[in-house]
Every structure is written in C-alpha cells, then in structure tokens.
Length: 247
Image 1: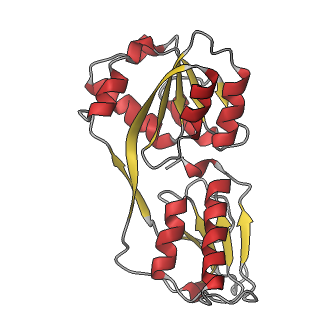
Image 2: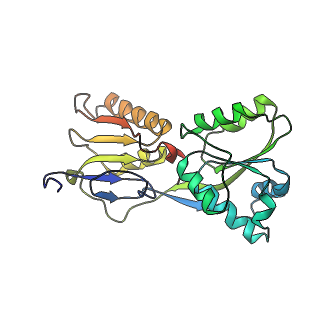
C-alpha cells in the first residue's frame, strides 16, 4: 500500500502510458501533434517516390501512424512495402510498426537520434534510397549525416508539434516530480509555473530535452528567477528516452 504522504507525478507530454512509476500520474499535455496535410508540396514530393525507397526511418510512433494512414488514403497496399527495410528510433515506435504488420530490421538501443545514427552508420547504404519520416520541429542531424555519407534520401515532415494551452493548471504543491517529454514542454512549463517549489524533481525524457531543461534553469538562475540553492534535481529517465520524437 502506498504511503499516504506520497505526492503525485506531473507528466507534460501527450501520452503518459509508457512512463513507468508506481505513483499516481497527473496528465497535463502541454504539446499536441498536428498532422501536416497530405497535399503539402514537400509531403507530396516525398510520397511520389514511395515505392522506390529501400529504407524508411521512423522517428516516432506518430510518424508510423500518420505514414500508414496516408498510404491507405493513397490506395496503396502494405504488401507493396514488404521489401522495404524499416528502422525504428526505439521500442515504442517499433511496437507501432509491428501493429502495422512490419518487423523493423533494427531498433535503436539508445532511443534517440544518436541511436539512429549508430544504426545508419552500420548499414551498407551504397545503393540505398532512404526516407526519413519525422516532425517538422526536429533538428536535421539525420539528414546531415546522410549528406556527408553521400546517401540518396528524402525527408518527410509528417507532423508539427505545437503548444497546447491547458484550461486549468494543477498546483505544484501536490506533486514532487515533473516529467518533460520534449523541449517544447520545457518552454511551456515555465510560462505557466513560477516560482518552483524547493525540492521539486524535474525528469527529462531524452538528452535533448535534458539539455533544454538545464539551459532554461541556468537562464533563470542568472536572472535571479530561481535560486541556485533551491535543491531542484534534474534527471534523465531510464524508462524511455525515445520521446524526443515519440509523440
């Protein structure tokens, strides 16, 4: 039985399902996914070559869902992709691929863009044609890597991550841990919550989110909005680092 004085966890991403804890999770989504239209010029350009790609890289569960929704709209069959090598950024994205009937050839062990770079670095891509599916707000590290290696590729920005303004805010007095799933959740959190209570634990999902969080706190310390001795603890979750992309 849980101790009665144990406080809750506040989760700021879209879906807290895969965040493992034995405590009650309060869900306050500060971001949301907006699919980009199939008729967008860059999406159309990427989809014109759909049956020519040798590899498709999925950087989130949202990219999996939107991709297969769009090929269905186009009247394409999943069977037409049976010889395409699918690569997933992490176990959650891989699970969504399996739900669509595809077993990824590789899943990043380090569930981040660095993990994908490790996979791509091991593959023979001499005659490859790679499709990168991603959010429009993601940094272009993967495409830079493929350019340097001389690999033929296309990028398809399938969705955008935008801020979600909550109707009602919980009190931070009721929580002792806040979980940030994405760099944008960091920016939005500090718009709505200041000052921070002493002893609050801030958990980042993914190294990029952690860097954003550390930078924000350094900025606030420099401007005297947060005292350096406030005992705010930042940690990088070991449960899943995939959610830099996995919305």
